Length: 242
Image 1 (cartoon, rainbow, N blue to C red):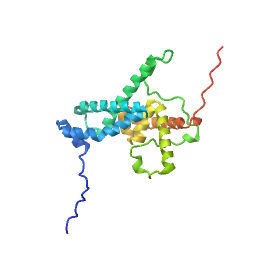
Image 2: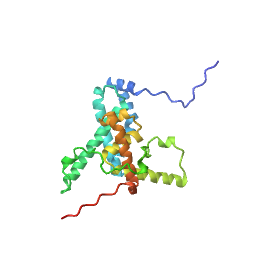
Image 3: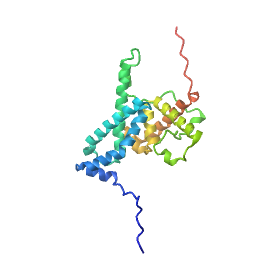
Image 4: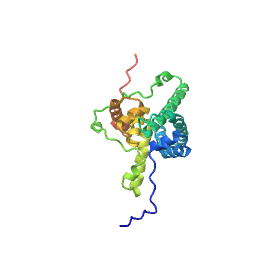
């Protein structure tokens, strides 16, 4: 029996991350380049979704992605390989973005007299106290589609008015996402965009695995409230001054 011919357009199998990491540690520059090229686009996506959608946000995201790649190169000798390289790379990137956002918030507060002290920004990941689970809309914790990079491959192609509506919906979700506290934004991106498992998210964010589910539930509620302000609980009236 003759061996079937190999298709001309068949792609050679790519080496796994573990092999590229091992080779990069042994000063194989080609392996290091391949490893960074493999992840730079998804790390850029993490940065961009944490920042916003403007042209300035895109430039900042590109700069932060470069910063993260430098930290990944510097930290590669200490990477213990107990977790997946992808999880570790996203953790490094998320730390870079969160550090940038905290610094940005402190600078804004420094130029806004009369507002909260910069010390109050130490933990920018505080849980929102203005969310409500009373509405039946929030009885479920399914993710809201926020434009996963692979979503286009998994969904049926949109065309005509449907495509315009789809793009408008994605833009609305992106705007709502940008208004959320950074902890909500981060966990939604890690779970609903990047598709990380709960234990991986816990490693990226430095929290207990049991905390991830409850935070994710609250983050999805916050996103739905941002998308439809009518479902948000009313602001309590200000007591009259005496």
